Image (tube, rainbow, N blue to C red; front, top):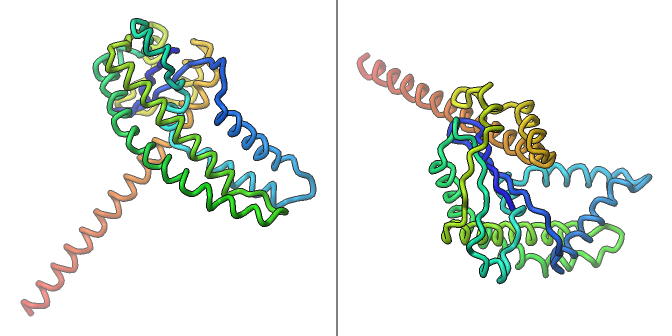
Length: 259
């Protein structure tokens, strides 16, 4: 397993985990079956509503938080892994952009925030599954609520277990920050203090380390961060407009009283 720290913008960092799983749990097999049934909706002929349902559902799935996607990619810790606590996990980062200490602190904060979050919503999703099962009384329509709840249950479970594994790695000092000359060279062509990492540079990073999947996940993270910044700016502008309006109203009231 290798972890990658990808700074995207000032104080905005994304993470990626490279891990090849050789085993599948029963829950993973059930989820894979559910995913297969879901994907079959897009191939249904002469059924526009099913195709439309798939498109809308896929758009919702694409909005899955990039931090959750990262934690889901971290393998679940097994007992034999605990026994091999002397094995280090490479944590690759660009030292010209972010220090090892700051990168580690950012990862630690993510774990601290996400452990209780995913535990909470894992329980909520599990509680909704029995209710979702009642939708099977309509055999013509796929049981979308059940599929969705199973998917969310598995997602929160995987993210929670991934966060637990990372917490163990940090607490046992198994994380090994590793500066990357390849990353430093790519980041030398941009300044993330004033601009966000663009798609071309993300592609360059993925190509340089030969991990195509990294580009997909980091681009999703980039898009979500941009959307969040846009919403925050809109709120700030709205707040300023409200304050200006209040000042004008107050000034007008004062003028009326003077008259």
